[in-house]
Image (cartoon, rainbow, N blue to C red; front, side):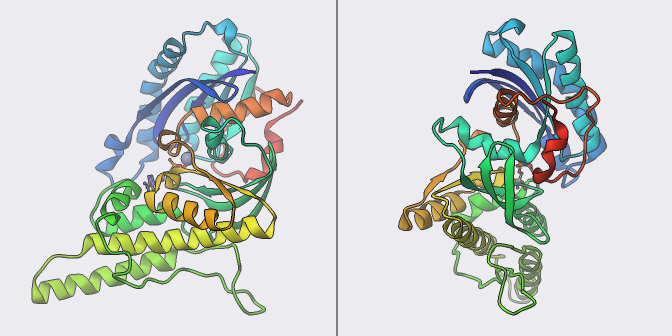
Length: 351
Ligand code: KG4
Ligand code: ZN
């Protein structure tokens, strides 16, 4: 069982973890959310600087908590794509330096691959093939995981990612950043049937709709129009804006779109397990509705523990263990990439 120290700095969390196989020995996450909140979203240059000041302490803390000497660590890994390039470079530079100083192999990891493997940290028995519903702040896709490093994208959003839709709707309701957790909380006290909102669908040239692709930008615009209308009515007649009902109606529409497509992907490809990954995997409505829909069809659903849904380095280390054990290594010339499809990760490794 290999032991990997991994770093994650692709966005606004400075994270370092040590994982042995699928067991987390330490996981440190220094969040920058408070710094970015006043701007309503992540400011890339500020994110890079915050990573620089937090990374040293996070590495030291991860090593201390794991009670491991360097001799027990087999490899050093870091997220190298996709993400904010300046932010990625902080983790990449730190990981390369540690690999050189301690003479360890170095591996670059695709951020979304980390989200796929986050569920391995709660269930050591899960193995491909399975369907992964990947729902993060920047990506939403339905991935057929055929093996470690072997991915086929069955469907995806054509515009906004699910997490992005949560963040944008929260902003237009003046709920702050990030939007997912606050909408999730409010939705629990609202009526999901209060407002009928459109579930985005992708038309096919031959008629009908794409069974797996999704669209969330129309839904976001519908929430904007609805909110403007309700605000005008409120100004004329008084009363409160029914924010909890709007949040619940929005969330249930997103969840319905995701659940329907995930179930269709799994059934059509004879996959009996659905693994969920990414920040939106923390959503209580998604967790409840997907479990219920899957149970009716005798499908198994796996969600990561809440702390491994949003960005962390334990999931990156877990993905790195898979690549390391296949004999794959990355060159020390590896750079950061803002965009890279999960189907193109072979370019990160040589044997
Ligand atoms: O995976 P992640 O930490 O970062 C990216 O790789 O993008 O995901 C962050 C996203 C944000 O859009 C945030 O609003 C969303 O995950 N999120 C949630 C919840 N917690 C975080 N969305 C819905 N419900 C939640 N409970
Ligand atoms: Zn992420």
